[in-house]
Each structure stands twice: as structure tokens, then as C-alpha cells.
Image (cartoon, rainbow, N blue to C red; front, top):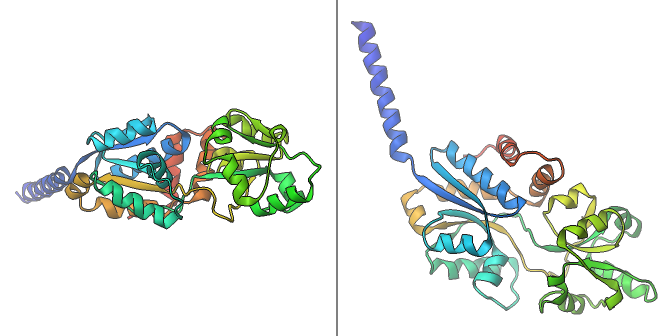
Length: 298
């Protein structure tokens, strides 16, 4: 009789736990874009939230505008968006804003669409000028201003700058960068190529200067040194969890959980994870799991 009584108590306790988990279980659709960093962020978020009892439908590999439209239409609950993308692409902001002002502006504008910007991470996947490590060490150049000074001091030397065609020709690309830093590249010094080939050209010392993204895995894998944008020419692209307000209302713990995740992301961490995927060939799922083991979250 006692064993039966104990068994009934255990069954009752188990039923309460299951009922509690079921009551807290919410299916969340987590969206992601179609490049390495976004695949990694999507998988980290999915694994983390599953560990907190959510049912997750992870949908990575989307184009920016498609993902944005799907979230506005209520088809996606959670995404990692970049402040610069929302400002320049979705909200058509043309004025120059610092990182904090840009975050506040997109937060305000997107709130009108039912989208809540949580805490921006220190992760800033923006443009940078990159140098081969050997060249950076030989010259001691660490900022774009120092590069501009070297170019000015060597007027008869050819300084080749590799970039994609879009940056070379768009109104907020090469020309205003030159104006901001007081440097000038002749037509013979600008080399337009596929964005991915810029990293290879830097790695092989085929060009001394290249346009890169600060958290691309090839920066670390190919020994490229990103220069500090000391005049803050390039806009900020801080990765930030953006969630539908209706989703947050239904899940009161979600904001704190995603903010905790946002706080442990930065450029160094992301560079290493992107490198592990793109250069070392590790599966995204494995890289995400290792990150979560190394960064215990509430």
C-alpha cells in the first residue's frame, strides 16, 4: 500500500511538471538571413530558447527584405537585425547618426510597426578597411587616418584598394569615404571585384588595402587587420534581437532571455565562430552548442 501511495505521489508530481511545461511551451519562429553569421545567430538562439522550454521553428537562409516582411506580417517572431540595415534599407534614413542615435531612431520607428528592439549587442558587423597582417605590422598602421597620412606621404606610389562594385559606385561609398579622410585613389588604384575575392587578394598580398566586413570569418582565418574607423565614417551595424510586440506580450521572460544572449556577443566572439564555420568547416549546430556551453545564460 505504501509503495502504491508513493507511486501515486510521484505520478501526481510528474503530471504537475508536465502540465507546467506544457503551459509554458510556446512555439516561436526564429528567422535568419542567408549568410554565415546569421546562420550561427539563428542556431544559437534556437538552441538557447529550446533549453528554456520553448518550441522553436528555426527558419534561416532568408533575404533581408523577405525576412523583414515576414516579421511585419506576423510570420516570424524573433530575428537578429542590424541597426544600420533597419536605418538605411527599411527606414530610408539619410542623415548621419552615431551608433546610439541610430539604435534609438530605428527602435522608435519600428515600434510603430509592432516590432520591439531589445538591447543592442556589442557585435558590430560593419564595413572596414583591411590590410594584410604583414603590411600592417611593417607600417604600424592601425587606423584609417594613419593610412590616409601614409598615402599622402607617398604621392608617387601606387596604393591599390580592392572593393566590390557597389561600394565603388554608390553615393555613400568610396567618394565620401575619400572626402571624410582626405585621401584619394586614382582609377588605376581602385580594383573592383567580387566581395569574397577581396579577402583572397588581401590574404595573398595581391592588394595592400581591401574593403571588408568586420566580423567575416576570413578576417581571422586569412590574417587580415581591420583598421579602426577613427572618424566614424561607416554606419553602425549592431546586431540586435528584434521581436514582435505580440510575442513579447505572450512570453514575459523572453526579453530578459534574449537581452542576456545579446550581452555576450561581440566582434571577437563572432569572428571566431564565423571562422570555425567558413575556414575550419565546423557545422553551425556544433559551433552554436560550443558557444552556449562556454557562455552559461539564465
